Image (cartoon, rainbow, N blue to C red; front, side, top):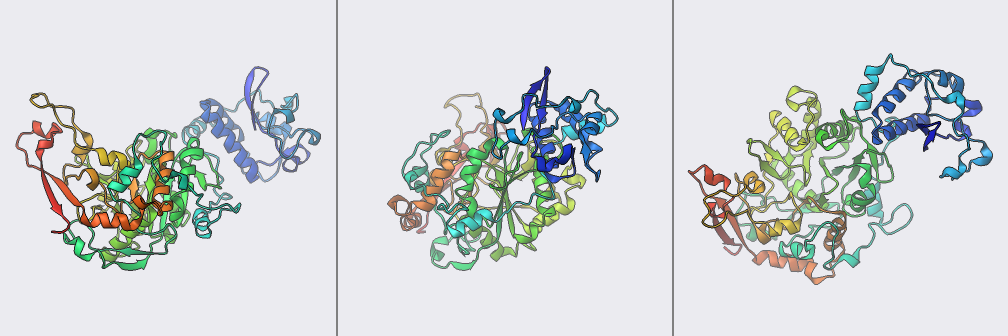
Length: 540
């Protein structure tokens, strides 16, 4: 596939092997040709050539369902200018990948179009405006269990150790895009894994939920071992992140999920990633439409029946899969099976417009029952089927709330959060913004503090539950670093599970609870004096 200039016009030239173009005939119904055409359309769009994409669609549209092959002359008469007869076999090799293998005259005049059909302009413009990438729905089936299988076997398809060893990252390590000390953050917050990535069982503490039982320390030895729930992890991204963030995820925590699939702008089944079709353009401001299509894909591909829980988030989240499975199993043990009980689990926020929602940053988790209810109503008005917005997390929360599915308080018995909107280093260092002493002018509000005012927050080492499940804004280097610290550095005394758990049993924790204010202005000052500190020791 080449992007070339011919006679002063920029065009796409596709060279096909002679076996696909016998006797100069082109069969557009062939799945390989279909996919190539879609790649070309996608390339036009990525280059900002929407008009070229639209005319390309118009030119080939009427040929798609024709059972007979089309010769070059007939294609040219219809304005198909981007397909080329393959070059002579003596100038083409199986591995040719550069201009050296291209004929000096790559595009025969008989194929260059001089007229563009206009009868389908409106339809073509709409299709060009929607994101329709290079995926053949019938022929491309991603293997969503591939990474899990590699993890269980301990080897990838080439026989290399999997996940790849990263023990060189077991100590403080500089991470591009972050200045946080992840060793210190994980150690001080006593964050650890509740089991290995390939565990088939989990040990749950059903009382370790906020408000369930305040005497948690008395029951730490009374864990219940149950089968690990089946979890599918879904990640949305773009092709530019495949070699960086997605590669980091694939080689670290992805194998801890029973199913794993990436939704991108380009299909790569070795990840596995698929290009997902959705209404409107592929831009951040249209995230809700992309997320809608992701959930519809899961339902249409019958993946819903294979898994009990579904976790969706972006390419900068870090999941600790066994911790997530342990927490979800504890919920199910206490409140009912995810196959029949609707759960919507994540990090709760309440914005200034009084919307309660699970933020999409660390990802949110749905039970099978919730997903079934969502898919049954996804085109209903209360689920905003035509809305263009980047706030997919607010929109899906509003949709599910209207369907009777409410947010779950995911804190542990001590009030520490399990899902986190930021990475561990940021969480450890955060305190609410304070106004200047003596100043009568309110300082700019701290949105994070405001969004958590309803239930209060914990700070410092108590920011995060030891069995935390997910973090956000984690760069690719930090994903690898944290994976090594949690899963491959157990010989390091600072990260031995016994050391961390021993520290957790003696740790004092403090909770900052909001103080009722009568002065409305004070509510927006970000002033720590609005809180009272309530400290307790586990020994009590």
